[in-house]
Image (cartoon, rainbow, N blue to C red; front, side, top):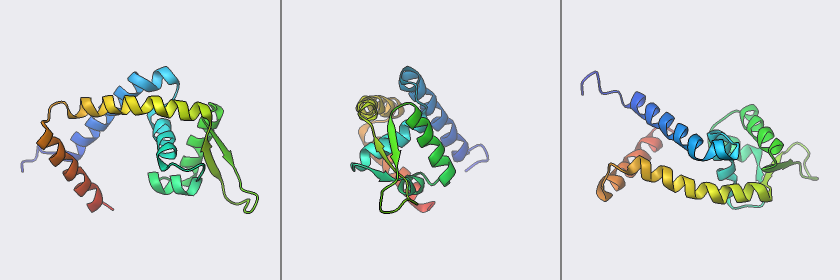
Length: 142
C-alpha cells in the first residue's frame, strides 16, 4: 500500500457525502438532522413501545448528555415523548409519537434511495463483498 491509500479519510468523505445527501433529500424537507433521524429510526427499528435512554446511549456509543440532547430536540418537534416510569424515577424512557412513526415510514424509503446511490457503482457480487468487509471492519474495531 502506498502512502496515498488513506481508507479512513475516504470513508469519512463518503460518510459526509451520504449525510449531506440525506439532509438534502429528506432532512431539509422534514426539519430533522441526519443524527436526529438516525435516533428516530433506531427507536422505530427496535420495535418496542418504549426504549430506555440508556439503550440508545449504548447503541450509538455516545454520552448520556449527547443522547439526551438529541431526544430533547426531537421532543420539541413532537416526534418523541420522554417519560420516567413510576417504579423507578431515575430512568428515562423514550417512545415515538404518531408523527414520529409517520416520519420513520417516510425515512425508510429515503434510506433505500441513499443505499442505491452508495452502491450504484458496484455489481451484486461487489455489493455483497463490500457489505461483508464493512461488517468485518466494524466488528474488529469494538
